[in-house]
Length: 136
Image 1 (tube, helix red, strand yellow):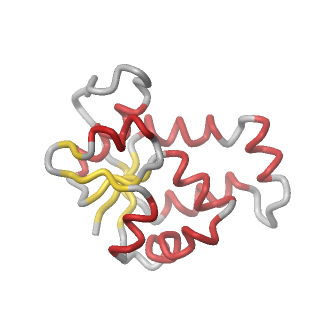
Image 2: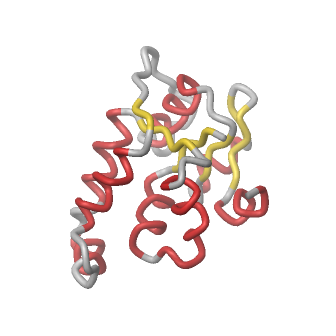
Image 3: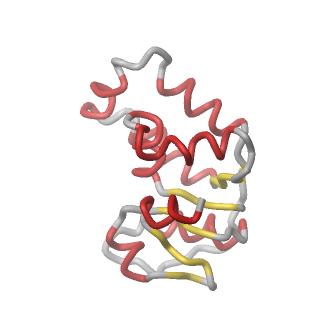
């Protein structure tokens, strides 16, 4: 199964993972292929440097950057050739859609209202983490 997860899901999985632990295990055991684009990776590293996130990550046994590097090592990087401009309220959400379409994923996992509102793109359902975990 191939998925794109938005940044808030990735951060939650790495920092507060209990409810998303099955997702992380499925990625690490390669039952699920997590897909990123260079833009979604950039956003991930930008968000982990927000002061409130850095404060939360400070208590981890391993630096969050190391956790992200390990996650990326078992993930697939895709390179979207075309831009999508479907979401105007938060244009950065379009980068998630671009990665999902070019990677031909089965699902997009998100807690973002802009993404959830459109429900699907190119036949790819957009699910909350709870909805996705019911499928695992």
